[in-house]
Length: 155
Image (cartoon, rainbow, N blue to C red; front, side, top):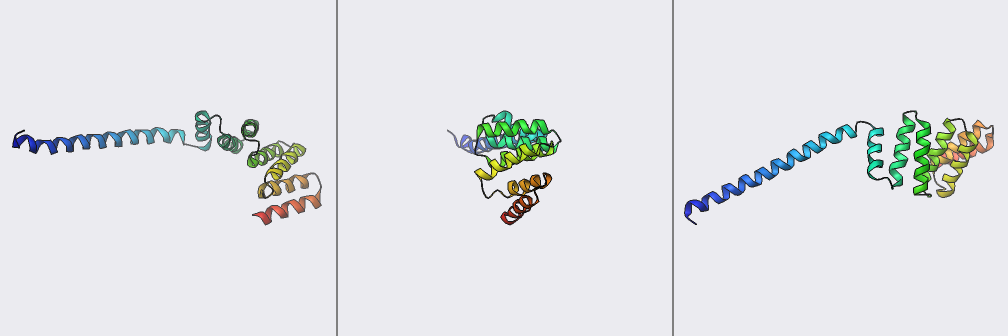
């Protein structure tokens, strides 16, 4: 190699490195731009996550919450039940299922699921508190007071 060729070699490497960096920046910018459409709200985000990881319990629970927040109670119930079938020890799914049934006016069924959540996780503050609300709806004031108090203490 001549002396002139030795001087060109660092310049060529610089342009190769610069091209790779610019290519990576464009790729990540494009990916981020596309991802923003998926993350526009909780419903689209968690639907995408469930589609990509259908055998995981936690995304189903969060998709259920997104459905619930959008007033789609029956769809939320389906997601909570699928979550529980994937992980029968997921206490939040039982508690959320209880809330969904309570919202539908099925207080006895809600009580059952709040109790399941508490059985799995005795320190589940929301399940205790919600159980107290459900007891109150049934007129069981002593039980309601006890559970709501326990829920507030656990928080």
